[in-house]
Image 1 (cartoon, rainbow, N blue to C red):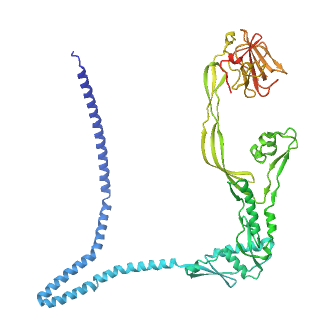
Image 2 (tube, helix red, strand yellow):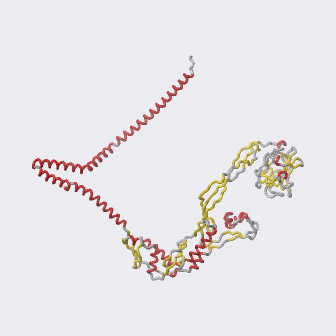
Image 3 (cartoon, rainbow, N blue to C red):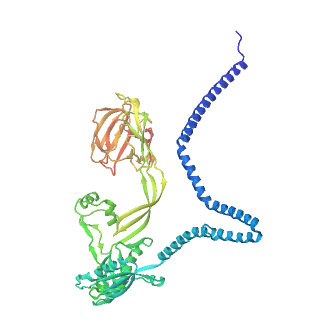
Length: 573
């Protein structure tokens, strides 16, 4: 058999590729041909089905063309007949007769029954009528029609609509009924529509002016004064509102001096600047009104601190949060509570409350997340914080509204992240726990960190600690688990009330011992064998301790060693 060369194999590959391409192209051609046939069939079907529609459309178009062309055909035929008649007349009667016949045909062509002038008039006249009607309607709509108001037979004036009178009537009733007035004004309105010029239309009466005129025309005694309205309710009228206005401005100015960059306004809606006619019985003394506006609805409330009261207990007793009490009593969070102290429970509530809206910029924390991972160098059941979690910080800018020093609304208007949180990483041991301890587990650099998290707060005197301090103090949270630094036998598990407090001593069998002092609870007993990383006690502050921590020592016989040299890792602050 003849052996194929490299060139022959390449030719075979190219042949297969070309055959495959041809096959693919054939498939696409057939697909497109099938789609084309289907589309063609659909178009043919639609064409056949629309035959009736097409015929009707053609008939309509022909009819429309006939209508459009009809006038022109009439003119063309008339011109043909006139030309033929003029030629015939000239042949029979001469040139003069032909001229006269031409003028006769021209007159008929222009002014005859179907003449050009008549046809144009028949077309233009309806269009002109429509335009004239539109113009008349537009002119009528542009005119100012207003309501002529007459009360009890006397002309009051012109108003925009009848509702203006009814609003004025409501204002009158508020003025009359104040302080139980028994005044009775008979009001009998009459309305009529009248056309006014633009100047008169611009002088239409308002509801307040209508109320004043009705009072003026009535038989009751009225005076010019300034009505005072609180949230739409009429409280009375004063002859001079200067002192009232100055008092209200003074209330706002006090807040503006405290919050110079805040938006200050009354919570209630006050109206006191509009003057008008009021019943004499509705006039009140401005000093009385000022005393009401500057009075208080309720006085401030206080709680007297009792024995054993704490911040948390006060919150439960009063039903208030720490934030609310902090707002009422600045420094409340860190305040030392002594029996007899007064704690404010509510602010004084003035008759007129004031809205204070300030722009506040502050930081909030972004809680960090916790990530756990397996660590083969730690015994099973033992965990270590390898990366301390750190909360992130977000800076916020918010519009905050306070009413009587109580926050009522907070709207964040911008924010940005100052720092991202750092994920806390905790190693979880997977190393199998030995059934028996081994002295070889203890020794130089072999002791594990003895508690859950924390850091060294006080070193030995060799490393700068206070004189006579022969161990290290490790600060962590109260009740944190304490682990055996290495395997061994518990030789002591008890309490020293004056020094170590509750403590544990483990002998590791190779001349080393470790001490764990100031525990809050012990979970082993003397003579018990423990393995490295075993939970032996809980961190506390018993004995001579200030704050929760564990005092950790490493001993060799009676000699105390520096624990830093014997720990596999030391966590610093």
